[in-house]
View 1 (tube, rainbow, N blue to C red):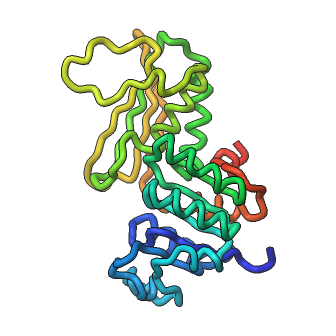
View 2 (view 1 turned 180 degrees about the horizontal axis):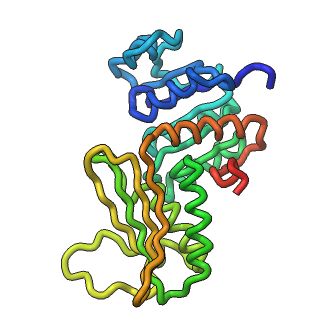
Length: 269
């Protein structure tokens, strides 16, 4: 493609939306052609750069995804599951690559992405950073190497505003551990402990969530046995790493066949 791909950012006023817009504005490989917000939002009709408190970017905030997607080659979407499912269908109509960083999907919502994936490339990941995706692969390998004498616990920490738990990244890590063990995650998940819960089940994969302050994202995968522990850890200190990963994904997706891909595909892992 000789012209830089045009990108629409959904949820433009959110923290990730603004970070994505700043990263695209600095990119020499992508161009911002649209910024979306929900109907009635204060930013509608404003230049998105000015709305963010910076220089004008000559892109006005809109509330009509169909119109925005019609002029783009890629959509980057860190919003909410219901919105992402709707955006997937509209992006597929436009044959635009849809990069989804949204977390908190139900199984039914994930299944609802399938029809769109028959017409356009969807790249979905609970976390878009290189380090986290390497951690996923390491978790799978360690889980495969250590038997059920080692309890597995995924501990995650995020800022006070995060609305879903466990985080999408924690679930990615849990899925990797389950795959390494050759089990189905939903059959061995143990989370939400409170009160007299009884002893931990052998082979269970546990989840613990911490919420507070402005924590960008911290994830530990603990393999604990009698007398020893193996701990794999990733700490994010700047959410720009997620934005850079999303930009890498939307570029990678240009020209790809329809289907659902992950960051492991993007990174060749």
